[in-house]
Image (cartoon, rainbow, N blue to C red; front, side):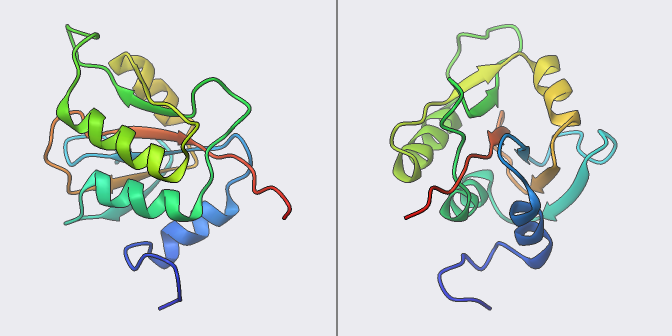
Length: 143
């Protein structure tokens, strides 16, 4: 155990987050996401929600301030303008940690294509539909 680090951030996930550089991306995926064979390293956090993992990750990882969007969900298939309830929770968590950052969505297959190039996919036990989010890592500014 470490002080001030959420306990659900295990050694493998912490190592991955630490190794990522500015502009690298990580996926937090729901239980239905086809993570095992997309290509990136798979880190399992079964039994935890995507929102719990998002909150823990954003406790230690900044989002990229140099792009228009640094957090992407998967758009609803057949109705890209629809707003799933989990999107509001994602946005609330993002704003708590990164008040200037927004949240947008990507078409399903565009989301999969982007996920294929991520540093890792963190598969959660999230059962809410569209509980997937991609985060682009930012920098830590000197104090």
